[in-house]
Image (cartoon, rainbow, N blue to C red; front, top):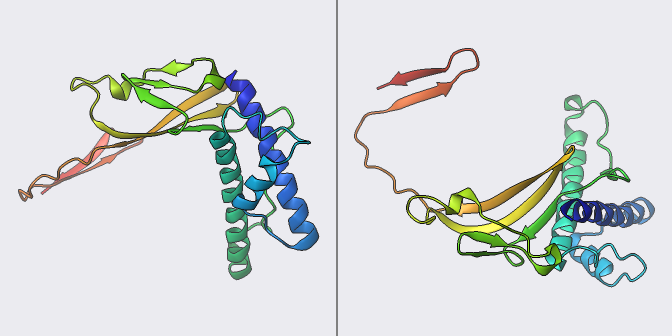
Amino acid sequence: MIVDFCHKAKNLYNHGNYIIRNRFIKDGYWTRYEELDQMLKQDLEYPDYKSMPTAQSAQQVLRLLDKNWASFFAAIKDWKQHKEKYLGRPKLPKYKKKDGRFILVMTNQNCKMENGEIRFPKALDGFKVAPRFTDRQNGGKEFDTFQQVRFVPQGAYIVMEIVYTIKAVPQMEDNGRYAGIDIGVDNLLTMATR
């Protein structure tokens, strides 16, 4: 099921990229996220947007596509000023492979944290997971807010990344003692104290 949704996310990414590329090549116009989102929401010919588990997950795919285009334009700007840093002119964002998959993002608007479990929307058939950060000695209260879950395709696997914020750790009072630790490759570590 998750693999299927990651494949649908790839289809949506490619469809959005097709629209942006063609408009940019033809008219020199960059179709931004907001406009693309409205276009694909109403597109009845290609059900890529509506086939996603939630509207927010479709929007996250389009936001990632918009970031890729923003990176392309930043690279072009830098390339014009510092051509020696590059092997060639930066290229337009490419399409994902036909049989490939793309990141599926489920935000905290879709997934709810209840009783130490993340519960996913109905489109994921009652899928739920109990992450480790909620099962600590003090009752799982060391995290502040749950943000999102990302399903990241990596080869034959899909890695689930859970994004959350932790509570700020109170800073200790300065006692004048310091240690610097550098984790090494050949040596375990190098340490200096004062």
